[in-house]
Image 1: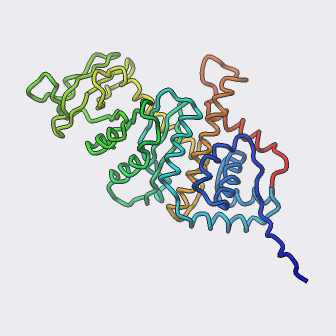
Image 2: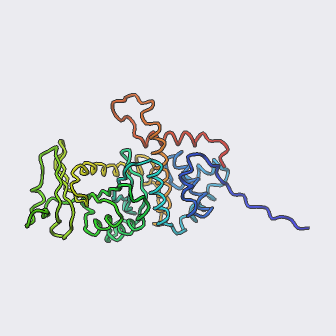
Image 3: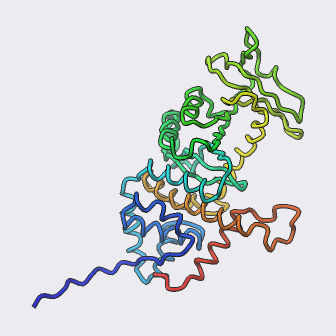
Length: 352
């Protein structure tokens, strides 16, 4: 008599409305990867961390599956190659579409996890925070050129957004290079790159280069001068902005002529620091994840990225509700979003 082979029991989470952000990435993931990422995303928003012991213990209590089994499953996930290009393009398109951004501000910056890892991140800055949409994980304390990695990330993101949507890419002084400037322009985007004040610039109407500091306006004003960055032969526009309470002006290069008004958008670049703070001690506790491979860090950063998108969406819908002081920002959009998502998923029934 033939008997049917019993099917292996696999815990699968039920779908909830907030999980449709992860569904946009499903075509590029295997069923096992997608299921594990669902569980990790839910745990991140409920317990606020992806530390391995805490994650596996929480899933063990919620599903009835042994914590060591979860540990082995996530260990196998970290051995799989991470599909960078399709994931990053989909993340960028999803963030812009779901948040309905009239213009996109991308910030390029790096963050470190102790001395183990350095992550080069491309983030959408919004709501005074940042949502990572592309990244490259490098070893800490290992000298190497970053420009090839930045150029590779920008190449992956090319064409991910409609051509009519204005995109500004913000970088600090440490990332300035003419190659990176040209790569941003090739994507059809507008660079807004801060440079040092000791360089020279030749205006379009001049025959000789002048010191960049000579274009400095009065505090509270901004100027834009079209010409060439003399040392690089780069045709661009120099924007100099000096805030009323700022100690020094910003010297910026862009490809848009007569765009003095765009210089004030550079202030949004500092939001990426808040985003990194949120990924670490301020929110998701990335510094507690002691992962041994760059691929494993990339997989966990995918969970962090989707989690940031979800809390941003939830926080924007309930911003300002129930706060005791409406004259100032008593709680950030991300904090309110994390509380809303955590309450929704922690109270979900039928888990597992």
